[in-house]
Length: 299
Image (cartoon, rainbow, N blue to C red; front, top):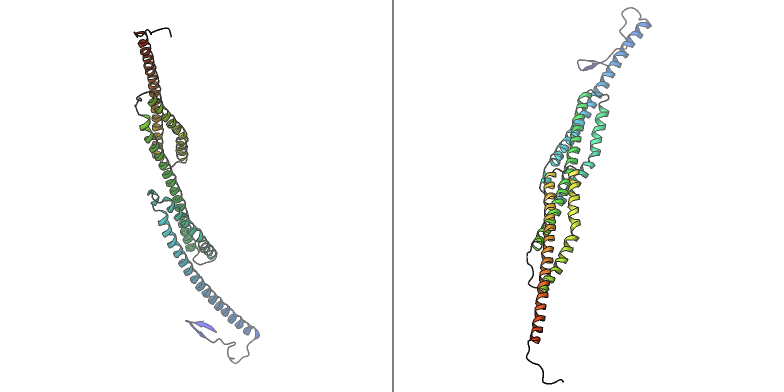
């Protein structure tokens, strides 16, 4: 059968005899021509079938690539939000992002399937260049998603660390400000017993202050660590650390001054007490010396 204008017509194995007998060589030649045409026809059919199959594969590849790219772009949008700037519920946001990263990891197989399919098709496909370009677009979007996801994770972690530092620093500042009122007191004490009572209470106060010094050290170490990590809020952290250290220095200075005031007051009250006791003793002795009672007899 041979093709002509999209239709097939029968091919004669031999031409009708025209008065003379055909030679074997003529028959062989015509046979070879028929076989050659049939081979060409078969190759055309195979080529057409291959192109149709490749076209089908190409459409499927584009469909898979489009679906994957749409999913990737949606996740890039989520990964690029700035929810980390809101310090509320940071732990919940971190846990949510961990689930988000797990979802990305679960789609790695889908990415690899599209990637491997595209690379295999590009080896001998009539649209090899277009397939390679589409693969580059998908791989670029995938890399962008991973970069955005890692960046958001780091920003959430930075935000959590920054929030923790601010909380610890504020707690220490509140504690120091509460004790500042005691350290800045100017009450000298009414008498010796009162001063000694104030000194006893102040000794307990001083022990409490001393026991909390590691908190100040911890805040400074935490701040230094965050600054060393190039925390995006390093300026705020530096300012807060400075305020903590300044307040701590003021508290210690006021505590020392308060101790000196109480020690001075104690010395004064001791002196006053000694004067009072001496005066009482002298009065008692003066009464005895100035008495007119000389006794009635020797008994």
